[in-house]
Amino acid sequence: MADEVKLLEPETLMNELHIDVTDEEKNTIKALINDASVIIRGSIKDDLTESQILKSNGLLFNRLISALATQLYYDRSLSTGYSAGVQIMINQLRARVLGGEDETK
Image (tube, rainbow, N blue to C red):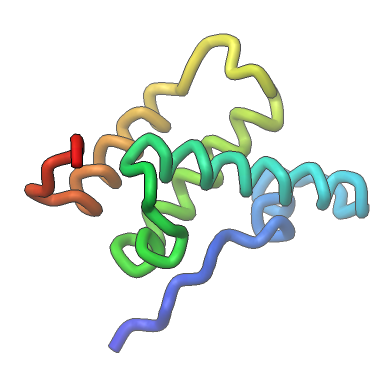
């Protein structure tokens, strides 16, 4: 049985982006991870929980959170919209989570 995937930790993303670990930066990254999770889940299904999506495809969810949180870190307003990579991952995750389910329900 595979290990349960846990939500991306702020320190992990900070290390990936080579951001100094200070309380201020950690709080910012933590908020951006939360924002990215909310945006992603809302893009798939209104009542989707982190637990459900982590069980469905946690590795892709965390990679998508990382990509979107990074984009938000450098451009809080997403002035150019989602990057192509974020759009692709949202579509892949939506397909994996919903499968043949009717998204309008």
